[in-house]
Image 1 (cartoon, rainbow, N blue to C red):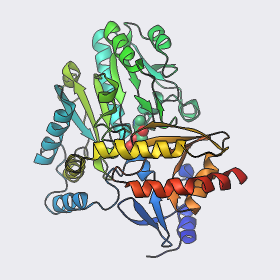
Image 2 (tube, protein in one colour; image 1 turned 180 degrees about the vertical axis):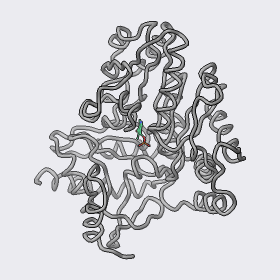
Image 3 (cartoon, rainbow, N blue to C red; image 1 turned 90 degrees about the vertical axis):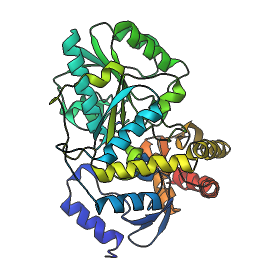
Image 4 (cartoon, rainbow, N blue to C red; image 1 turned 120 degrees about the vertical axis):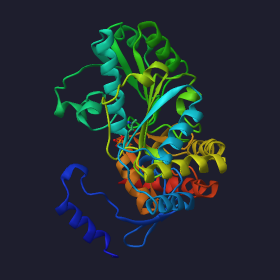
Length: 398
Ligand SMILES: *Cc1c(COP(=O)(O)O)cnc(C)c1O
């Protein structure tokens, strides 16, 4: 207890594989949109565990739901069903407002693995042999999800992959049209690319993708692992984008910090799997389902979708109003934004922000991602906006 930052970081480095490097801050606790380091320093959390801590930290609704459930029944496996998972699946389908079926798992990569296997099975049944995904897209680190991930620097060291995936530039209708034929099993994409730096599609792109998939019979898989559950100011980003995918994948914000992922197959895509085709021992465990239900209930009862749009716009307007040579713009939607820089100094901005008491994420060399808890207040946003010019100056000089 109370181990200092340096001590914990040294022990982390000795005990863990080097894949993450050593994170700069050891966190000890959180409350609302604030977290405290192991050394007692307070931070405003503007990244929310990568768009995961949707209700912030230690939200009473999640604490209550998880505590009660873990004290009642923590695990059943898929050999037995339980009420929480049924409630959650029904709830998701109700929010989606279209007939479908749900699969529950534990993470984003797992959700995409499930979607991938659904598409493989669909392809085998219909003579479709390849997949299309987008350049700079991100779908996870498992071999299947990685094979769909459009960032060559993280995919290629682990290739070749056993499945034929063809990459097209994101937001390019003509390129997609040329790539998708009646031999294509599925198109995988994020409606707004998160890891690429919160890059939204142009108006009309996603409805064009839907039309291309309809014309060729390719399944449209929307990876909303990062964009859904209020992050973009709507339950699901695709609802605002005006299209319905065949398969939807969810994770990150759904559990408000508890690990859970979900896949929804709409219409016929909901019944591609037959008994025995897929499974997960921990998937849909009662504790994570209880957390997810608390998240969805709270977004509803606290009217958080409207709040996200209001404070998200305030954040974007406030960043855009900062006049600084290092800042070139801001993009994104809701509480999901990227601050764009004139130079590749995102790492320096992240470090300067941390010194000033704000956690932000250098998602790209010249883009800083903000994905704060959906419960962040206007006052907290304003505190960051007031500090931003000095943070940028410090980063520019670093
Ligand atoms: C984070 C992310 C994933 C991977 O999720 P994990 O839970 O880390 O496996 C997949 N797709 C998108 C769009 C993501 O943002």
